[in-house]
Length: 82
Image (cartoon, rainbow, N blue to C red; front, top):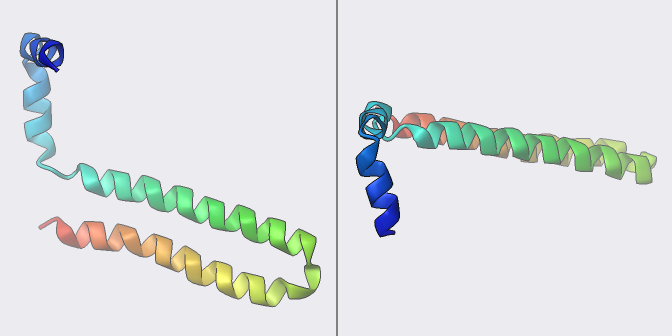
């Protein structure tokens, strides 16, 4: 931990960069997580329809609901930023 602090002290522009972000990194992380979540939902829904084509309607309904919930994370993160 001490060596990390020495490294940060030798590169002062990192502190300026962190101050410029103003704690908004959570929006980027929420966007990344939502993108990964929607991708996983789509992949698993496609896999499930491939295994049981007769249940396509039910699978798509559930997949759309879960994709919307994953996208909702972005809106929560954006509303936290004032």
